[in-house]
Image 1 (cartoon, helix red, strand yellow):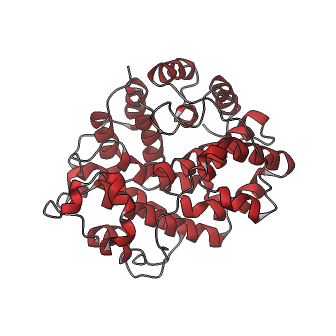
Image 2 (cartoon, rainbow, N blue to C red; image 1 turned 30 degrees about the horizontal axis):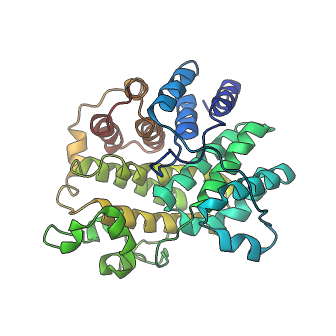
Length: 363
């Protein structure tokens, strides 16, 4: 598990095997999932299988080269760093800046300083800036003295988040009276009679600020302990995944993996940032629902349907994830089982099985 020497050494070796991969896959603008997938496999106990998985991953996708730094970003001067938030052509400069900070300061201090600056862009590239950062945090937190390889991966996670930073419109606040499940049920989706459903998800995302459904839902969640709200999010969105076989098979997995990633970072954040993180996560959930789901028709009975699923034991689900091979399936299986262990709910194994069936296998 993540606290063991085997885990730490395994992740370090895996990261070294992928140091030559850039931030995104060549020609697709999709995030590099290799480090996240390998770290999740290490948590699941697959030490000896990771090198072969990395070979399969590298065969499946070409990647951009790691970006070279060009101009220095001064972290002490807001006029230096703020204008280049979201400037992907400065990714190498962001990485250089974070590597320098992590060499000079404890990683926890760097995380707390930059988390609120990056948080408004949580939805960046379907939350992959956040998720890659959280996987890296789990890695460095497993060691008394993190090594340069794993500190470098944390620098890359933060740099990707900063370089692709793109805030959603509006501000979410925990000032309402509803649970996450109530908030999801109350959100009107874009029905088949609405001409907006003809647009691609990216178009609907671009129009979020104009959607009454979105604006009126930003403040509906009631305040509460961050741990409990994250549990409401992961259980509810495991059910959302099960309820939408018609949706694209990958995007909605992030409704679970993103709040589960926040939970990994939560112990290192002050209380105020914890609540703020949950609020921005809810904002991202609204974006996912409006971009990738068209109705609520199948959602109300999903927990009962999940109870009827004959799900195998966790150990078999883990073995199936490795055999399946897709990085989303591996990360989703690890995150959902981790959440299931904290708060057992039949929607988690049902969602894992659905992801295994819907997402194409990796040859």
